[in-house]
Every structure is written in C-alpha cells, then in structure tokens.
Amino acid sequence: MIARDADRHTIRALVVDGNLLSRSILVSQLRDFGVMQIQQVGRAQDARKKLEVGTYDLVVCEYHFDRTQYTGRDLLDDLRQNGLLPLSTTFVMVTGEASYACVAEAAEAALDGYLLKPYTANSLFSRISAARTRKRELKEIFDAIELNDMGRAAELCLSHFEDRRPYWLYTARIGAEISISQGNIEMARHLYEVVTAEKALPWARLGIARVQGAEGLLGEARTTLENLIADHRSYADAYDVMGKVQIGQGDLDAAYETYAMACEITPSSITRLQKAGLMALYTGRTAEAERLMERVVRIGLGSKMFDPIAIVVLAFCKYLGDDDKWLQRCADDIQRAFERDPLDLRLKRFADITQALVMCRRKQVSELASHLEAMVKDVLSPTGDFEAASNIVRLLGLIAERVSNKEFADRTIASIAARFCSSRVTLDVLLGAAEGEAHQTLIRGAWQALNARIQAAMAQSIEGHHEAAVRALIAGAKETRNPRFVETAEGSLKRHGAKIARAEELAKVIEELRVALLPGAFKDPSFGGREPGSILMPGSAAAKAVPAPSSA
Image (cartoon, one colour):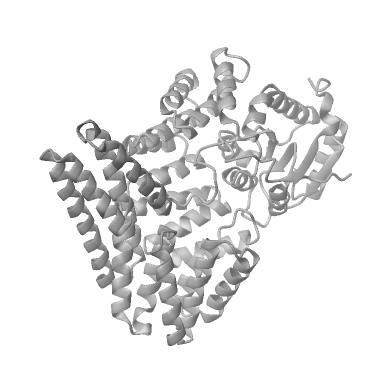
C-alpha cells in the first residue's frame, strides 16, 4: 500500500505538534515515507495562520497543546467552517487516550484519519496512504467542487453512489450536501436516509435534520437534533445546526445556550465564540458577550476567521462599563480596518457606530447629532440591512438621554422597526437591542401594525378580491420596505394567480421588490460561507489561497 503512493515525493506537508521531540520524530517518519516538502510549527494558532494563506496536501496535527485551550479540533473546525480547508487536503489527528472520544467525534466532521498514541511508523504511513487513496479515487469530484461546478460534482457523486463504488457512503454525503445547496431537498433526503438505513452514521442523522430545516420543519429538525445530541454529546456540528434551527424558531435564549455548549466542546473555535457572543448580546447577557468577544479578539484578531462585529459588540459593552480606554481602542481598530478597505460598507457602518459611542462619551453633542442623522439616512436607504439597523437601535437606546433628542430617537426606532421587524426572530433581536421599555413598545407597535395590515389584505383575499389583496401587500412593501409584505404577496400570487387577470405584471413587480428588499433581511450569524454541518467549501479554494512554500 505504501509503495503504491508514487507521488508521495510531491506532497506538501505541515506538521503541528507542541512537543519538539514528538514533532521531530513525526518529521523524520514522514521523510522516511518519502515526503520531503515539510513545514513544522509548534502551536495550533501558527498552523492556522499558515493554512489561511497556503494550501497543503497533508496536515498531521496533535490534538492537545500544553498551556493553551486551543486544540487540534478547534483548528480543524475553524478551518472547515470558514472554507479554508480544501477537500483535497488530508488531515490526520494524533491523540492520546484521554482525548480519543473528542477526536472520534471530530472524525465525523471532516477528519481523514487519526492515530492513537503510542503509534508506529507503519501505522502513520497506513493512515496517510489510506486517506490519500480515497482522495485519488474521488479526485474528479473534488476538482469539480474546487471549480464550483456543482452540477458536475453532483452527477459524479450520484453515479458513484448508485454503483456502490469504493467510498460510496462518503460520496453520498457530498452529493446530499450539494443537493441541499441546489435546492434539491428530495434527493438530499433520499441519500441521507439510505446512509442512515445502512449504518445510522451521526453525520447522516445530522443531514436529515438539515433537510428538515430546509423544508421549514423546524420542530421536527429540533427533535432530530435533540436525539442526536443525546447520543453524541461532543458532536459540535450538531450544536451548530441546532443553533440555526433555534434562531429560525425565534428561540434566541436557547440558541445562546446551544452555542455556549459548542464553545465548551471547542473552547477556542473563533467562529463558535463569535456566534455565542452575538447571541449573548441579543439576549441581554452583556457581561457574557463582553467575556466571549474579548476572547475572540485575543485569539482571533488578524485571522481570516475573525469578524469585526466582535469589536462592535465589545464597544457597546465597554461603553456600558464606562471603560473609555477600551472603547477608544475598539474605535481605533475598526477605523484602521475601514481605512484598509474603504469600499467596505459594512466596515464603514461599524466605524460609524464606534465613533458615535466615542463622541457621546466626549459629549460632542453637535457633531454627534449630524453623525447620527447620516447613519439613520444610510440604514433606511435601499442598501440598509438588518445588522446595521439593530446596531443603531442599540446605539440610540444607550445614548438617547445624553443627546437630549428623544423625538429623533423615537422616530428613528419606529421607522427601523416598520422596515425590519418582519418575523419573530427580527422582533426578538430588535427588542433585545432596545434599551428601555419605551423603545420596546415602539418596536412591538410596529410589529402589531405589520400583522394588522397583512391580515387586512388576507381578509380581502378570503372575500375573493385576490388582486386587491396582492396590490395592498405590494403597496405595503413599497411604503415600508419590509420584506414580509413581499413574501406574503409572493405566496398569495402563487395560490391565486390563475384568478388574477394581471398576474404576470404583479409577479414582475414582486420579483423586483424581492431582489431589492430581501438582501437586507436578518441572517443568522454564520461567520463564513459554510453551511452549519457541511463539509463543502463555499467556493473555489484554489482561487483563495496560494501554494504553501516548502522547506527542508
């Protein structure tokens, strides 16, 4: 088996181990295997930096690192969640007995193999060769995915699956994930159910939950996930999907608890810490949001996995804690990031938020007033989005008394709520962002007005006035720019289009509104292009990374 790995001399390898002696032995063993292009690092954080900017054919990583919570699993999960680990890369974990259970769960995610200490050189070679054999067998599929040719990749996966060729279970998994991404939910369900009937693998059970979520069956998905987590309590991917389902149900408190549990399993996963920190903020756990985001900044600043929303959350927390030094640091960090990328509208909005907090702290009332007016004009413009809206609601709640302009704050929050309060999730997030009962009352009022207006339109439809109902919903969308009107109008037209004389004309108007309004709607905090629970990358890895340099 080892002798047949004829291209082993071309392998670009990265060895990650905090123990110098163990690392040296691993490097020596790989050289005996014929691998000559080897880089080595002693910390998982250093490996993360290398893997963010370079591609490797092989990564051999220790699970445990002394004097740090960051594990090999944290590294693997962060890379996968942010689309930084190509499917063509072989990732092998080395672990001691104490960490075996966690590594076994990680193997369910995207681990190509693991070695239990003590191990022999032959065991190492056997694991690497077996994993690389699978990579070669599925190379055509991986190449299609790297080129973002998902149609071709799906065809190859289904052919492999139907013929029950070697590794057909793995190709079923990839094929199912591609099917989900392309909206072919029935095919995804079929593939996951076949695999579950064959072996009841945890990732297949997780896939069924993802299918249920994609179909809008959030209650069923939650039950499936609860059963899966009960059987596999350290399966971190299950918590990622559960958090998304709970957010979809509007249960933000449960989503926070779920992401917090995921952080306990992978305590230094930048992506999961950010999710938990944002959910903590949305649910009023300010102290916990501050603790989590401080950790994110400490271990993740400068990483491709880092999302600058962490600094904005910290700025809010430090303002509340009267920590002017930290607040200024947050504002400076965001400003520098914006100066490096001055066309990034999201960074500009973050810089505006943090600068407003600093202005308020310095009592620059007149400058702050004009600054706020520009921010509100932006968020209510066609390019405004829910993230910016919720940040402004929080900002106005914190500083309204200091700027002595209650009327402006109330008017702005009412307008933001009318536009962006489109579901139970957005209602709960905006209520969590609001400071004080007065602002929460304004938000609830906008929600009630939205529902009343939609119900009035639906009453027209029930009476047989279908075109009038759709037109009333379109008018509501144009007036408030609330995406709920668009979604309801679209559904009504699909049900009753045959009875509406100008259905095609209305469909065109609805589509234009949908394109214009839905991009600004609420999105759950994924922090990366990867769908929770998926092993697929969001695009071509080859276009994002450069080959890693080799060293002797």
